[in-house]
Image (cartoon, rainbow, N blue to C red; front, top):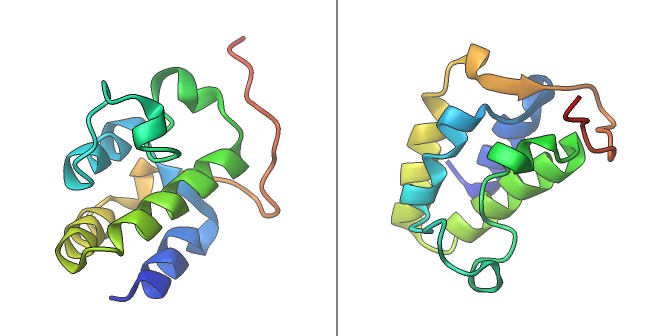
Length: 107
C-alpha cells in the first residue's frame, strides 16, 4: 500500500484517528519516545491523554503527519500500515466532514 492509499484509508468512512489505546502504539513503530523533546519530533506524538481534547481537525492532521513521517522508510510504513489495517472499526474516532477545528471541553 502506498502512502496515498493509506491516507485514503484512514480518512475514509468518517475516520479521524484511532482511539488512544491503539494510537499510542504508533510511538513504537515510528520509534518516537514520549520523553523526547517535541522539537525533535514536531507534530508526531499521538494526541492522547490531554491531547485528546484537541480538535478533530488537529487529530486528523497528526495522523496524516505520522503517515508522512513513516513513508520516508518503507519498512516503517509497512509496519504502520499493518497496525492501522488491524484496528477494528469500533476502535476509531469518527466525525463529520468538514472536521471541526474547535477543541473539546474537559467538562
